[in-house]
Length: 263
Image 1 (cartoon, rainbow, N blue to C red):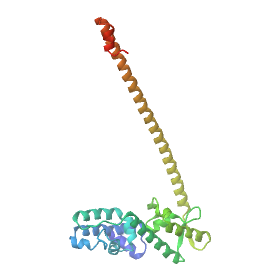
Image 2: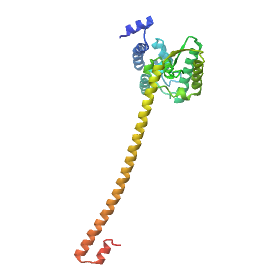
Image 3: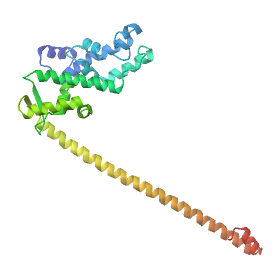
Image 4: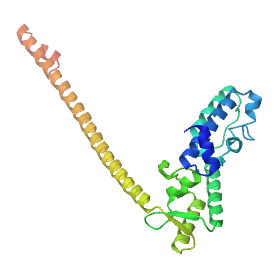
Protein backbone atom coordinates (compact mmCIF):
# COMPACT_ATOMS: atom_id res chain seq x y z
CA UNK A 1 0.00 0.00 0.00
CA UNK A 2 1.42 3.38 -1.00
CA UNK A 3 1.59 6.57 1.05
CA UNK A 4 -1.44 8.19 -0.60
CA UNK A 5 -3.65 5.20 0.22
CA UNK A 6 -2.47 5.16 3.83
CA UNK A 7 -3.16 8.88 4.16
CA UNK A 8 -6.66 8.33 2.78
CA UNK A 9 -7.27 5.61 5.37
CA UNK A 10 -5.95 7.86 8.13
CA UNK A 11 -8.20 10.74 7.09
CA UNK A 12 -11.18 8.38 6.89
CA UNK A 13 -10.40 6.99 10.36
CA UNK A 14 -10.13 3.42 9.07
CA UNK A 15 -6.36 2.93 9.32
CA UNK A 16 -5.06 0.08 11.50
CA UNK A 17 -2.15 0.31 13.93
CA UNK A 18 0.25 -1.54 11.63
CA UNK A 19 -0.66 0.62 8.65
CA UNK A 20 -0.38 3.76 10.80
CA UNK A 21 3.15 2.69 11.77
CA UNK A 22 3.99 2.25 8.09
CA UNK A 23 2.69 5.72 7.27
CA UNK A 24 4.67 7.32 10.07
CA UNK A 25 7.81 5.51 8.90
CA UNK A 26 7.27 6.78 5.35
CA UNK A 27 7.31 10.32 6.71
CA UNK A 28 10.09 9.81 9.25
CA UNK A 29 12.70 8.25 6.97
CA UNK A 30 12.92 11.16 4.47
CA UNK A 31 12.83 13.56 7.42
CA UNK A 32 15.94 11.92 8.87
CA UNK A 33 17.64 12.07 5.46
CA UNK A 34 16.76 15.77 5.30
CA UNK A 35 18.31 16.36 8.75
CA UNK A 36 21.49 14.50 7.81
CA UNK A 37 21.88 16.45 4.58
CA UNK A 38 21.21 19.82 6.25
CA UNK A 39 23.88 22.31 7.23
CA UNK A 40 25.25 22.08 10.77
CA UNK A 41 23.20 25.11 11.82
CA UNK A 42 19.95 23.72 10.36
CA UNK A 43 20.62 20.24 11.80
CA UNK A 44 21.13 21.79 15.25
CA UNK A 45 17.54 23.04 15.09
CA UNK A 46 16.39 19.42 15.44
CA UNK A 47 18.33 18.84 18.67
CA UNK A 48 17.20 19.21 22.28
CA UNK A 49 18.16 22.19 24.43
CA UNK A 50 21.38 20.50 25.55
CA UNK A 51 22.35 19.76 21.92
CA UNK A 52 22.92 16.19 23.09
CA UNK A 53 20.40 14.30 20.93
CA UNK A 54 17.52 14.63 18.52
CA UNK A 55 14.47 16.24 20.09
CA UNK A 56 11.65 13.69 19.87
CA UNK A 57 9.05 16.43 20.39
CA UNK A 58 10.26 18.23 17.27
CA UNK A 59 10.45 14.97 15.32
CA UNK A 60 6.92 14.00 16.41
CA UNK A 61 5.55 17.41 15.43
CA UNK A 62 7.15 17.13 11.99
CA UNK A 63 5.96 13.58 11.35
CA UNK A 64 2.38 14.20 12.50
CA UNK A 65 -0.34 11.55 12.19
CA UNK A 66 -0.91 11.58 15.96
CA UNK A 67 2.59 10.30 16.72
CA UNK A 68 3.88 11.23 20.17
CA UNK A 69 7.48 11.71 21.37
CA UNK A 70 7.39 8.40 23.22
CA UNK A 71 6.31 6.64 20.00
CA UNK A 72 9.28 8.17 18.22
CA UNK A 73 11.67 7.04 20.98
CA UNK A 74 10.33 3.51 21.25
CA UNK A 75 9.19 2.61 17.74
CA UNK A 76 11.99 4.27 15.78
CA UNK A 77 14.91 3.92 18.17
CA UNK A 78 17.32 2.29 15.66
CA UNK A 79 16.73 5.10 13.15
CA UNK A 80 17.30 7.78 15.81
CA UNK A 81 20.46 6.12 17.14
CA UNK A 82 21.90 5.77 13.65
CA UNK A 83 21.10 9.40 12.81
CA UNK A 84 22.61 10.67 16.07
CA UNK A 85 25.84 8.75 15.47
CA UNK A 86 26.20 10.41 12.07
CA UNK A 87 25.43 13.83 13.57
CA UNK A 88 28.14 13.28 16.19
CA UNK A 89 30.67 12.49 13.47
CA UNK A 90 29.73 15.74 11.72
CA UNK A 91 30.13 17.67 14.95
CA UNK A 92 26.45 18.61 15.16
CA UNK A 93 26.01 16.78 18.46
CA UNK A 94 28.85 17.81 20.75
CA UNK A 95 27.61 17.08 24.28
CA UNK A 96 26.85 13.86 26.11
CA UNK A 97 23.29 12.56 25.98
CA UNK A 98 21.15 11.63 28.96
CA UNK A 99 22.20 8.83 31.26
CA UNK A 100 20.36 5.51 31.27
CA UNK A 101 18.72 6.48 34.57
CA UNK A 102 17.52 9.81 33.17
CA UNK A 103 16.02 8.06 30.16
CA UNK A 104 14.36 5.48 32.43
CA UNK A 105 12.89 8.20 34.65
CA UNK A 106 11.59 10.05 31.59
CA UNK A 107 9.96 6.89 30.22
CA UNK A 108 8.36 6.24 33.61
CA UNK A 109 6.94 9.77 33.73
CA UNK A 110 5.54 9.42 30.21
CA UNK A 111 3.96 6.08 31.06
CA UNK A 112 2.41 7.37 34.29
CA UNK A 113 0.96 10.33 32.40
CA UNK A 114 -0.45 7.91 29.84
CA UNK A 115 -2.10 5.87 32.61
CA UNK A 116 -3.48 8.95 34.39
CA UNK A 117 -5.14 10.20 31.20
CA UNK A 118 -6.89 6.86 30.72
CA UNK A 119 -8.00 6.68 34.33
CA UNK A 120 -9.66 10.04 33.80
CA UNK A 121 -11.52 8.60 30.82
CA UNK A 122 -14.41 6.64 32.36
CA UNK A 123 -15.21 4.95 29.06
CA UNK A 124 -11.68 3.58 28.58
CA UNK A 125 -11.56 -0.22 28.49
CA UNK A 126 -8.54 -1.69 30.26
CA UNK A 127 -7.08 -4.88 28.75
CA UNK A 128 -7.25 -7.84 31.15
CA UNK A 129 -5.43 -11.17 31.07
CA UNK A 130 -6.62 -14.71 31.77
CA UNK A 131 -6.30 -14.09 35.52
CA UNK A 132 -8.57 -11.06 35.53
CA UNK A 133 -5.72 -8.62 36.03
CA UNK A 134 -4.38 -5.79 33.91
CA UNK A 135 -2.65 -7.31 30.87
CA UNK A 136 0.74 -5.58 31.14
CA UNK A 137 1.91 -6.46 27.65
CA UNK A 138 -1.23 -4.98 26.07
CA UNK A 139 -1.17 -1.74 28.04
CA UNK A 140 2.51 -1.31 27.13
CA UNK A 141 1.63 -1.89 23.47
CA UNK A 142 -1.10 0.77 23.71
CA UNK A 143 1.43 3.12 25.29
CA UNK A 144 3.80 2.55 22.36
CA UNK A 145 0.87 2.78 19.96
CA UNK A 146 1.75 -0.61 18.50
CA UNK A 147 -0.24 -3.80 17.84
CA UNK A 148 0.00 -6.15 20.82
CA UNK A 149 1.46 -8.90 18.61
CA UNK A 150 4.41 -6.62 17.78
CA UNK A 151 5.44 -6.36 21.44
CA UNK A 152 7.58 -9.30 22.48
CA UNK A 153 8.47 -8.28 26.04
CA UNK A 154 7.56 -5.64 28.58
CA UNK A 155 10.33 -3.44 30.04
CA UNK A 156 11.79 -3.99 33.51
CA UNK A 157 10.37 -0.59 34.44
CA UNK A 158 6.91 -2.15 34.86
CA UNK A 159 8.17 -4.42 37.63
CA UNK A 160 10.99 -2.36 39.15
CA UNK A 161 9.92 1.28 39.18
CA UNK A 162 7.95 1.77 42.42
CA UNK A 163 5.66 4.49 41.06
CA UNK A 164 4.83 2.43 37.98
CA UNK A 165 4.28 -0.73 40.05
CA UNK A 166 1.92 1.15 42.36
CA UNK A 167 -0.01 2.55 39.42
CA UNK A 168 -0.42 -0.89 37.84
CA UNK A 169 -1.49 -2.38 41.17
CA UNK A 170 -4.09 0.36 41.66
CA UNK A 171 -5.57 -0.45 38.24
CA UNK A 172 -5.61 -4.15 39.19
CA UNK A 173 -7.69 -3.26 42.25
CA UNK A 174 -10.10 -1.13 40.22
CA UNK A 175 -10.55 -4.02 37.78
CA UNK A 176 -11.31 -6.49 40.57
CA UNK A 177 -13.74 -4.06 42.21
CA UNK A 178 -15.47 -3.43 38.87
CA UNK A 179 -14.74 0.30 38.96
CA UNK A 180 -13.38 0.41 35.39
CA UNK A 181 -14.42 -1.05 32.07
CA UNK A 182 -12.36 -3.91 30.68
CA UNK A 183 -11.43 -5.54 27.40
CA UNK A 184 -10.87 -9.30 27.40
CA UNK A 185 -7.41 -10.41 26.28
CA UNK A 186 -7.46 -13.73 28.13
CA UNK A 187 -6.68 -15.89 25.09
CA UNK A 188 -3.61 -13.84 24.10
CA UNK A 189 -2.42 -13.72 27.71
CA UNK A 190 -2.86 -17.46 28.13
CA UNK A 191 -0.83 -18.05 24.97
CA UNK A 192 1.89 -15.71 26.30
CA UNK A 193 1.96 -17.71 29.51
CA UNK A 194 2.37 -20.98 27.63
CA UNK A 195 5.13 -19.53 25.44
CA UNK A 196 6.89 -18.03 28.46
CA UNK A 197 6.77 -21.36 30.27
CA UNK A 198 8.14 -23.11 27.19
CA UNK A 199 10.90 -20.53 26.96
CA UNK A 200 11.68 -20.93 30.66
CA UNK A 201 11.87 -24.70 30.30
CA UNK A 202 14.08 -24.33 27.23
CA UNK A 203 16.40 -21.97 29.08
CA UNK A 204 16.49 -24.34 32.06
CA UNK A 205 17.33 -27.26 29.76
CA UNK A 206 20.05 -25.26 28.02
CA UNK A 207 21.54 -24.23 31.35
CA UNK A 208 21.63 -27.86 32.48
CA UNK A 209 23.28 -28.86 29.20
CA UNK A 210 25.79 -26.05 29.60
CA UNK A 211 26.56 -27.22 33.14
CA UNK A 212 27.10 -30.79 31.91
CA UNK A 213 29.36 -29.61 29.08
CA UNK A 214 31.41 -27.49 31.49
CA UNK A 215 31.75 -30.42 33.88
CA UNK A 216 32.81 -32.65 30.98
CA UNK A 217 35.35 -30.10 29.80
CA UNK A 218 36.67 -29.71 33.34
CA UNK A 219 36.97 -33.50 33.73
CA UNK A 220 38.70 -33.84 30.36
CA UNK A 221 41.07 -31.02 31.28
CA UNK A 222 41.99 -32.74 34.55
CA UNK A 223 42.30 -36.07 32.77
CA UNK A 224 44.54 -34.51 30.14
CA UNK A 225 46.70 -33.02 32.88
CA UNK A 226 46.92 -36.39 34.66
CA UNK A 227 47.86 -38.19 31.44
CA UNK A 228 50.48 -35.54 30.67
CA UNK A 229 52.03 -36.07 34.11
CA UNK A 230 52.00 -39.86 33.64
CA UNK A 231 53.54 -39.44 30.20
CA UNK A 232 56.28 -37.24 31.63
CA UNK A 233 57.00 -39.79 34.35
CA UNK A 234 57.15 -42.61 31.80
CA UNK A 235 59.55 -40.59 29.65
CA UNK A 236 61.82 -40.14 32.65
CA UNK A 237 61.77 -43.89 33.32
CA UNK A 238 62.47 -44.67 29.67
CA UNK A 239 65.40 -42.22 29.73
CA UNK A 240 66.74 -43.81 32.91
CA UNK A 241 66.60 -47.35 31.54
CA UNK A 242 68.16 -46.26 28.27
CA UNK A 243 71.05 -44.76 30.24
CA UNK A 244 71.23 -47.94 32.32
CA UNK A 245 71.44 -50.13 29.21
CA UNK A 246 74.13 -47.91 27.72
CA UNK A 247 76.08 -48.08 30.96
CA UNK A 248 75.88 -51.87 31.12
CA UNK A 249 76.85 -52.24 27.48
CA UNK A 250 79.80 -49.90 27.83
CA UNK A 251 80.87 -51.67 31.02
CA UNK A 252 81.25 -48.42 32.94
CA UNK A 253 79.39 -49.94 35.89
CA UNK A 254 77.85 -48.37 38.92
CA UNK A 255 79.50 -44.97 38.57
CA UNK A 256 77.91 -44.47 35.18
CA UNK A 257 74.51 -45.44 36.51
CA UNK A 258 74.77 -42.88 39.30
CA UNK A 259 75.72 -40.28 36.76
CA UNK A 260 72.57 -41.19 34.81
CA UNK A 261 70.42 -40.29 37.84
CA UNK A 262 70.03 -43.50 39.86
CA UNK A 263 69.02 -42.82 43.48
